[in-house]
Length: 251
Length: 319
Image 1 (cartoon, each protein chain N blue to C red):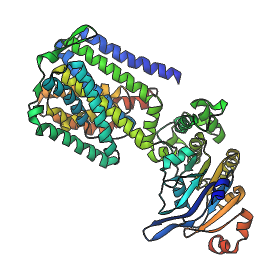
Image 2 (cartoon, rainbow over the protein chains, first blue to last red; image 1 turned 180 degrees about the horizontal axis):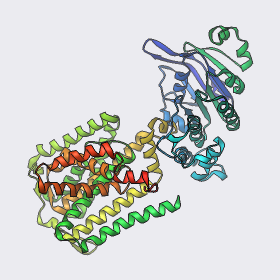
Image 3 (tube, chains in turn yellow, orange; image 1 turned 180 degrees about the vertical axis):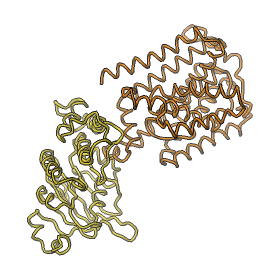
Image 4 (spheres, one colour; image 1 turned 90 degrees about the vertical axis):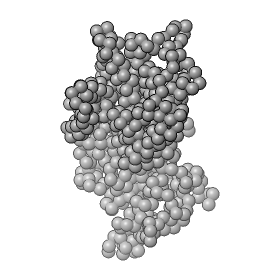
């Protein structure tokens, strides 16, 4: 077990969470490598969002263990996990609607600066709040909107803004819960490019219903069904898997 | 960015300079009134830190005002303390009370938070009545003669002089306004606004939102308490009326009227509201009706208050 902890960025052991009589997450053993993009797919109610809520700390598990970068974070509150570098983009866009785009991203950047004195120093070119916000807005293509109120942005841009806010804290593990939901085909294409640009040394979890999108981006795909892990493989292997075909891909 | 900051700083200093020059042209009666208003404006400034910036609606802020009032007045009355040490003591006690009550009340949210703060405030009010042997209860206590003047840095300060009281109140108001201005325009202000606008998003970015709210509570309670202490010391009277819910509602009204989440709003709101009530009470005994009608009109037509509306329409640089 010690060996597993040493090579993986994040691992869970026998993770369980019930809601009343329903087991949302059942005995999940998940292990993520540093730098991979992991797709998590599965039918509605399979436990995908519950699982990442357990990882990010929005939910507490009934039993099991979560280890991130060698630290047992099972009992830690969400904000402490975020400080360790776990970022979360909500399924339902969660931004600061009443603030300007700049202020939205500045809230993330301020956390990054507060955290920088410790083990993760800031790169030289990103010393100030202004610089961090600027680079995140350029990366997400929102630079033109910095003085606009977030509430006035189009839906697709609001989703990008949430990505920008999270990028400002420079996360180690970035969890995206259905990022392409509600986006147009063109926007999904741009989004794919964006993820390729921001992945560099980051680990990303993608929860998705849009299979072509996941299969295109992910290094490995985990298929969930009824709270448990049904299969885990590279995208090709998943598409060939007979069990996955019957329960999820519907063939 | 920089330009707007300069403009807003100029405006704030302008307002304070205007208040500085006012007594030269004002008759005594209005000088006294404005002294009162300025102290209440400190109360409103403190209230606004919690309500306007951190987004927490407290219905019990009279407890902090009363806490400062009694913590300053009682040691003077019973133990013969000097004015400056009583004032500092009151600030410390208010900060402690705000931290303790905050640690409990902040476990709740929204309506529950309103009710819990209201409840704590009633506890404070009833406590002042219960111990009326010490506190003077409803009738209150008039502070003794030795509390009407004090010496500081070799200077004798006479608290019976209207001018002296006016400038002490103005000094305290300026200091409070500048402190609040600095805080809300800095990192802490950004954290408060982030919690107000979207707490779960803020938590998921790594902020300890409970601690952020507790800081707002402590700063807010301390400012409110120092306003209470100043009120008691300047006018040499402490009484349990200041702990009643009416003071909690008044400060909410001042803030709403002037503009939630602006530094000058609560100051402006205190002035308008105080003179409005003053005006109505000359003509009718139902002056509380004015308060009620003002509240309803505000919420229906100007939910952002005077300065909030101005900021939205014409002056986006207003802090």
